[in-house]
Length: 291
Image (tube, helix red, strand yellow):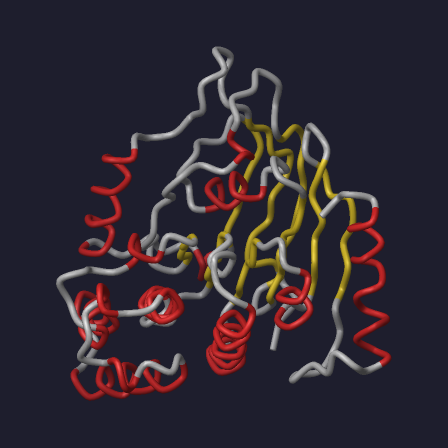
């Protein structure tokens, strides 16, 4: 359950891609190296961005200017918006991939350790070691965190079961399907129970049934571990299946176009009157092209 206090507070955020129109970002090679180092040193974020989204088209004007947002601890918050609305950029600002110009992003003290806020995107291979088996990939972060053997074993078995990977435990990533690989990537990212997981379009390349399975697993993990989840997606069904709140972003500079609580019990019934009522304001935003 959420304790309703902010896990992260964003105040007066200002960010642009530089006066010369070049995005402020490190090279792909450096970011790849940083991801490997992160796996050995505290695991700040296991995945790094692959291709840059359309939100990162170079601009001289600010993408964010005076932007405010709070995200409560223990909740699942979905960020939605049209292409170029700054969703992925905000995620990378949250994990310090991009530097702030002005403003503040303040994580609560118990979220501030390097391994407590984890970012992953749709490129699952960025989040796993191809030379390790499924089991070894999930176990490796626990070894680096010096988990005791039996505690480590219980957690690996638990995640293999929750993410439906028990039968693939001895397989290597190259032998997995796309859905299995994404399940492994997420299981590895949360193996040591970080306080916050940021999913940047992590499910977007998967079919609906595979996404539904991963969402079920994430909900179980969230309920059992009280994890905060920030979900960036274009899929309204994913939002309604998992999220407690949906924040619609848009405009330039980016602003909050709508903030919608989703107070539905789990599992959620798509045929219920409550479900239909919850999705109506989001569908209205879709009609106007905001999501």
